[in-house]
Image (tube, rainbow, N blue to C red; front, side, top):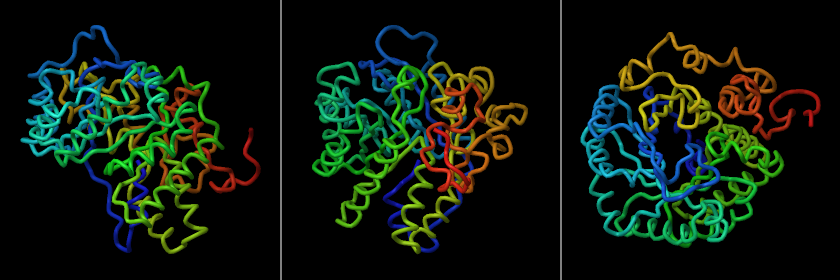
Length: 381
């Protein structure tokens, strides 16, 4: 995750070490009112069995608290469709873990927003992927845009910390100007712009993925609008996610325009350390399977019904977990020769595996040129 706004505001001494415990994304359910084409958990209507019970969820939170996990993201599906969600989020807060809610927003009425606030939620991320027409088509539900906007406004009316989440696809990037306009007009506190990770239903979109040039142009636009906000004093944070090439690109962009700021940004990026799968972030699905991150559902590290999360996460006999934590010598292709490896960490391994069958191949979504990453010669087409 690249917080462009914080990096623009960075000052000497601002870099800090990465936390030692992971943020956990718990996909509490696969139930959802929508059927989004890019859903990484293939959620929707129907019946999904074997989801963790309330007692199992409370036990999981107790275990995470003992492990000193700083934040737990309640995701899905739509977690608001779980009847016990407010009890789980309240217990999370009680155990000194920051509860974060990730939702479509369409189930948030003013009354629901009050329950969210009373549960101690620190941040609510609500997904909108473009204008009303674009969003509703992608999500397979007419009216989704209007209902999500009601959800955002209901939360903001209670002074909840709210962010708009947007996924960049061939169908949505033309709506980036609309989204920035909406964020500024509504006074939304954060805009999160995610690259596509090809997990779940999103795998079917891989063949129509943005080209490197389209990605580069879209990310450049996001950087420009983030800088516009910064210069205007707009307090909204602009963040990108799921492609650590963004950090390198941002640093290289600043090198040409503001070398002093670029040095500070480089220090901050080194401190962050790049892609955090298996280190700074972990995923737990609705049935208790633990994954290196929320997208990498093909690989289970264990199930919390059989083994506690701390024991799963510290298991030095798990080959994938250990490989992710010592990946530098295993990464292949362009990523292995990249001069910016220490601020990217090889980018998204799940995306590499989806595209090539090899989790340690180069990430095909890196849009940087060979010269930008310190490789001589022209990049193959």
